[in-house]
Amino acid sequence: MSIALFTDLDGTLTPPERGRGELPREVDEALRELAKLIPVAVVTTKECSLATARVPYAAAYACINGAEVKAGGYVAVAEDLNPEALVHVAKAAERLDAYVEVKRTTFGSPAGLTIDWRGAGRQPAGLDAVVAEAERRGLTVLKYGGHPFVDIYATKRDKGDAVRLLRALLGVSHVVYMGDSENDIPAWKAADVKILVRHKYNAHLSVEGAIPIPQEELPNYLRQVANNIKTSL
Image (tube, rainbow, N blue to C red; front, side, top):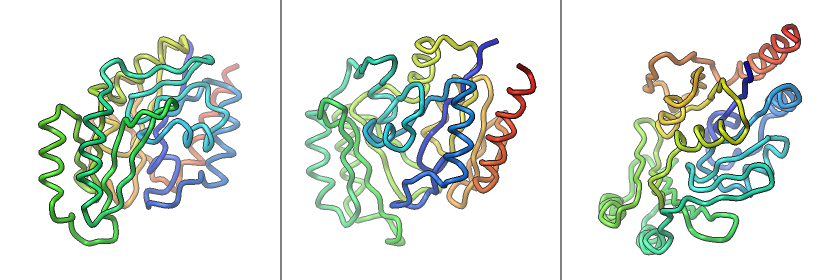
């Protein structure tokens, strides 16, 4: 049986707070060791440029919630990508009292948008109108129970689509998926083993059949997986 580890990035491999984007040293070392034994793929809502910089040893990447995939020297973008609609919504979002991040594909097309009000205490006035406009234009809106931000994507693709595509591209039969939030639910559904990385923002999240691992224990879990694989060889 061929096996691979697919993993989310922010909030899973890295701390959930904005601005703490680097992998902790112990996580990075353990993941690097594991990547020598089995394929590791990153499935993230972030841009591929960021994902490849943080985890340069991954075998493949699915970025911006599945809008873009990089694997085997190829780059593919979702066929239904609608950057024009996203640009319109991004302009409206920039008027909010919040941090706004536009995410672009490798080719520069706007593909995702995050509206983040962490530290503000309450959602910004006018957010509901921006979300309604995004939905009216056919964009995908993701809201989170415990996270003070909203994601908007210019495609109907999601992390589940990304997991299925990467499974085929990498030729693996068994996928372990690690994630931490609602946007990971489609990926967990497409995986064989579900790992829910726990932190202060996702205590509310319940995923049927998932194995919960506190984020601070993640390095030990990755090292144990690597040791188990070495023992089985």
